[in-house]
Length: 581
Image 1 (tube, rainbow, N blue to C red):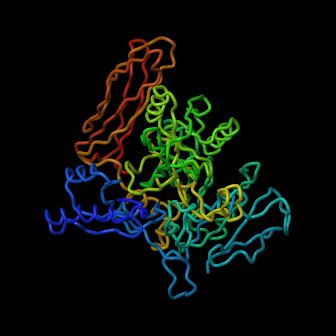
Image 2: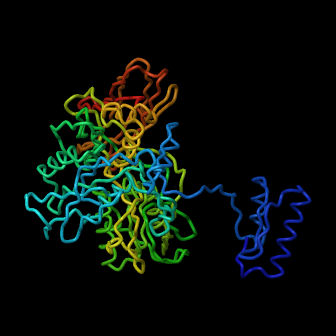
Image 3: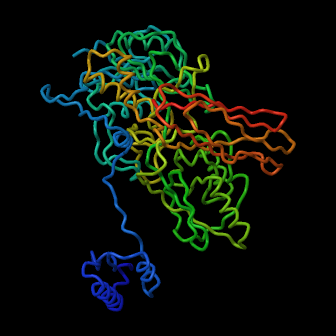
């Protein structure tokens, strides 16, 4: 195809000749002809024919015909694709006759805040009771005092935007045309759009006091909340009355037994990716493309004309790969005169950090080696960073996020946690429209934002819990929890091989060779590839692949371990295989 400006008589004649030859070969070969926006045509070709046409003079590009889908903000549709259980609920309606199932369930959210309700809408200087409505039925805040009336230092209003994002994910009404500056566009909605929302602001800039949390629990019970979504890491001795408590996993190192919030009346939620990816390509000299991630609205040209350098600033393997950390590194690059930024981090690649107007991308360590090889082998290396695009049906998905804590329970190893996983990576949901810090240069503040965390996965399950409660009002919290867990998608099937990749780091100074031995229960086949790891001074961290295969679905969870030994030291990694998660 060619640009519109290239549509002269010669180009059109060349196009006509190609089309004629194709029609002679096969009558219905040509599907479409393009003559206005650009010059070209769509045709049915074999792979050999496509390569042949691509080599002809005047042909700019030949590419496969992609199959596109209707756009959506994805996470709820992704969950629908994973299970045969229907996840559907309508928004709040003004008519009692048309009110959907879910309209009389109340989701209480303990966070930083947005016929049976017994609660209140507390006032402050910047929040009046008139702000509550049929959707936001109540709002409370906790400042450690029992003063009445407006308080200048505390309010139910969401100050850091986190609670607004969470509340929408759980119970937001459908909003068409939602996007983050054009990315992840579609119709955004919560898991139980018919549910009401009650906000309990237990956190301030100083943190989240346990006393405030307990008071919020107490108020929620009295207020008539059906599902309480607690987005904090804590241990609680309170057993709720007649509502389900869904809790995220505390954001900490993803080590074994690092999971908290494991009381039996709590539905513990871990975070996963979904089948959407935000891709930001890096163009190296010679038009070599490296697929990176992150979200960038930079304005560099598509041609790789910008000098490319390597340095400690532009390469990060720190444990902290939060968006704040990434932006700090970006600021350092900018302060030294850089006009673009490439962050190297396998974990950060999965969470789509936002760089706003600064041209930037995140790449894996594997892809960074290709970039470094290009820099070291080229006299004047150049590159460019393209605008971010969002794609769906990305695989593999879902994958448990690197930041999500792992089970089993520390106190009781046979108690498997988390109970369920839900999307928590790069989730788009509502955002207060006055947040200028999130605005891209030259644009208004976004009404929707994309963020990651276990806080994003928890409201997905809260929404489902409210939906189940609405359709089964007499069910106990245990029954609702059981329904959610037993209808979740299994992560391993009979005669299916499940593969995971792990890494082993040699912290000793001397070189060493470790060999793997496997302990596996009957009915489970486990392989380690490679079975031997050779550590040198230049190779301190090595990866290996584990594959698990069950011959038949087990009646109980399967436990085992892989032990690496060098004759002197033993490094044991336990595992558990469950078909119920």
